[in-house]
Image (tube, rainbow, N blue to C red; front, side, top):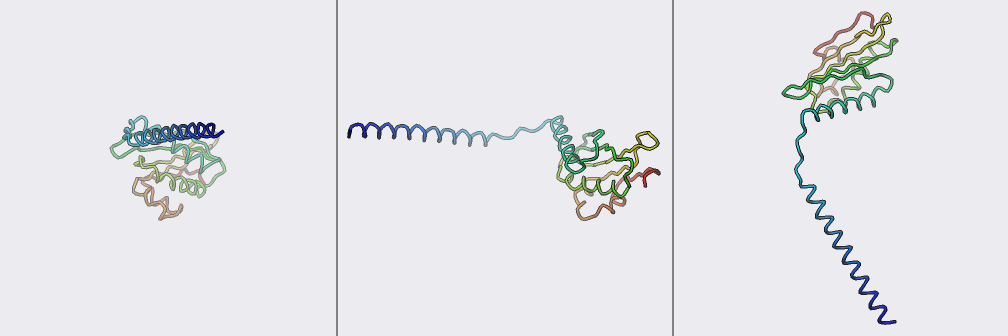
Length: 166
C-alpha cells in the first residue's frame, strides 16, 4: 500500500507540473497577443463604424422614429454626417428639437464626426417633406450639454423650419 501511495503521489505531481506549464504558456501567448500593435482602420471601415454607431444611438434614443438614410462625406477632420429621420405627422417642432437634442448628447462621443445635420421628414398633404433641418459643427456638438434643447435653433449653423410644422 505504501508503494501505491508513492506512485500516486508521483503521478499527481507530474499532473500538476503539466497543468502549470500549460497555464504559463497560455499566459505568455496572451501577453504577446496584447502587445501586437493595432492596425489602422481604412476609411471604409471608419465609415461603416461611424454609420453603425449613429444607427445604434438613434435606435436607443428614438424608438418610435425611423431612420430614412445616413449620408457620410469624409473631410480632413472626420465625417460630415447627414441623418434623415421620419417623424410622426402629428409631432411638433418642440418635440423634434427635444429628440434632436437627445441625439446630440451621445453623438458628441463619436470622435469621427465633424459636422452633423439632422433632417426631419413627415407627411405633409400625403407627401414626405423635410420639415426641420438642423446642422451643427463639431465645436457646438462638443459643448452641447451646456445648453438645452430650446437653444438648438440659435446654436445650429443651419436651421430651416417648414411652414407646416407647428
